[in-house]
Length: 207
Image (cartoon, rainbow, N blue to C red; front, side):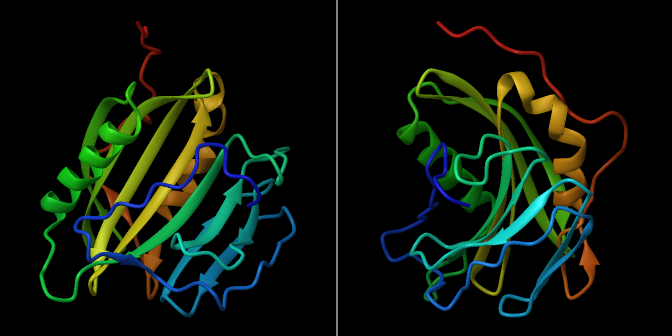
């Protein structure tokens, strides 16, 4: 989706981890109307509401597969957007979800000195157990609030991330969560445990 404002985070559990090969992926912009995105290569689909734009990633070595841009955003300089990344995990070992979560948090802490974890939640992504992390970081002086959901299937980690400046996180949260909750493997969609209002934490003070 053009220049990624925060850079892409690759969650290497071990030095043997590698990202999926997306060299054959073609950039395909889609009109900003509601629709369904299907990826036959990795066997998942997602729907998106009117106003959002979906675009497949250009060839990359970071596991980026597709992105969704919030309404009225600049596709060349996105601020509010969702990415889907896939990471190959070591074939020689079975990485548990909790182990992967520890690696994710450790990676974020080492990558961003001002990383603050606001909330965690168990969920079902597709038909599989998953995790949700809500955290904040500072990007070139702009506070960002980031919602990350992920699961593990067939030795691959599927990571869905909603990036937003703190001051516009809530504005696009409903649409972002609608897209994230539509993720499914072979038609199986994700569900969160429990119900109630969408999670929109109060801004925090940075030292």
